[in-house]
Length: 166
Image (cartoon, rainbow, N blue to C red; front, side, top):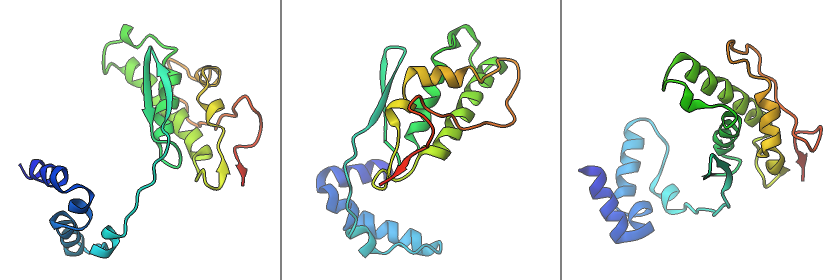
C-alpha cells in the first residue's frame, strides 16, 4: 500500500513530488535515522542524464540495458555467450543449467571488470564486445563439465588495448 501511494504521488506531482516533497522528506529522515548523509538539498539538486541504451538480440528478442558505466553490459555479454547452448534441453535449475549460467556470468563479469569505465573519459569497444563472434570466442573457454577457476578477460576482435583514454 505504501509503494502504491508513493507511485500515485509521483504520478500526480511529477519529479518535484519525489525530489522536493513528502517523499524526499521521508528519504532524508530514513537516511539520517540510519546514519546516512543524504540531505533534502541533495535530492532537490539532483539532475538526470539520458543515455542511449545498449542492446543485443537473444534468440529473436532485443534485450536493452544501461550502457557503461553501469553493469548492464554483463547481462548482454552473458546472454550472447549462452545463446550458443540449448538451455531448454536442460532441466531448469539443474546442475548443468546452473553451471552454464554461472560460467557465462564469470566470463561476462571478467570482461566488465576490465572494460566498464566512464565513457566520458574512455572509449569502450562496445560493438566488438557485443558481437556474436566475440561471444563465440568466450564460449569456447567454457567446459560443460568443469568450472573455471581463473577467468581471464577477453580481447575483442579489434585488438589489444582494453580502452583508450580521451
